[in-house]
Image (cartoon, rainbow, N blue to C red; front, side, top):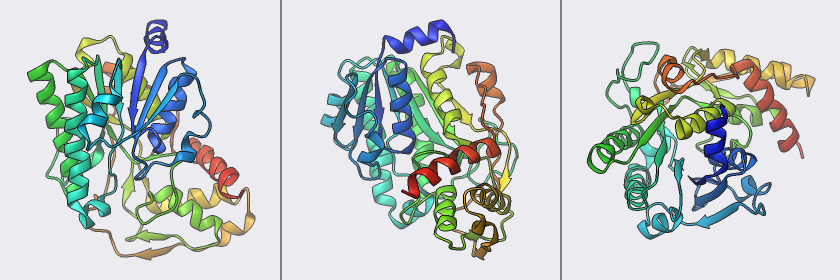
Length: 333
């Protein structure tokens, strides 16, 4: 980052909603490294207190236990804040299919509350987690920001509605926003437990427990897996960019390469077997395809490179090596 962007960070008060979650807690830690004043808003529905252990006593860190579905909590959280990094959401396509009402309450009503609170507090910029699920049934590859299909799940609908609301809040109220369409983010602190665990931490835990991971389908479905440090870089650039043309846009946040689920499982076996040789011999099983899943996902990151100077440093192999090392050190304790 350039000196101007670093100065913007060090003199700022920043709210991270969902700051106890996987992505949010990593963002909080990074911001504190840049000497920012950081406020975390979380209701701990999916976030974890242990994700904040390293920073909970930091002098520039404030934790507000609250819910984005409560407008009063949102107003309290944005007091004196310069920038909002809105990460709070109920993720997971299957969760939204099982319980569309709660997903809508959090992801749409909660998002609207945060926009209103940010508008009322004259926040300088509202950067929010959008989703690659917005591309829906579009079969074109790579995914380009201005070409989307029809949503394939309630979750996808909620994340697209976020983009529509953000656009309206800029046009109607002058609130500057930036939407970040995350593509299958992975890395340290991502929870391997629970019914809605993401594929990488879930597979890692199963391998570590000497269990066979189950791939949905024949393993040819592919994803643009994106390491957490790439996502952190993009959030910081979206928040601090001085390029007026970069604002009030949505961007893909990815590495720009795709990996099949079959290839992913083999890479994980290879890297984990460096810590435990027995893992190399664990077979992978296959189950039915999952409802609402997009067959292939690959991002074009040209727009982010051009307008935000995005320069992702972690491809799938380097990212997996880092993630596997973290899981080995933290799950084997």
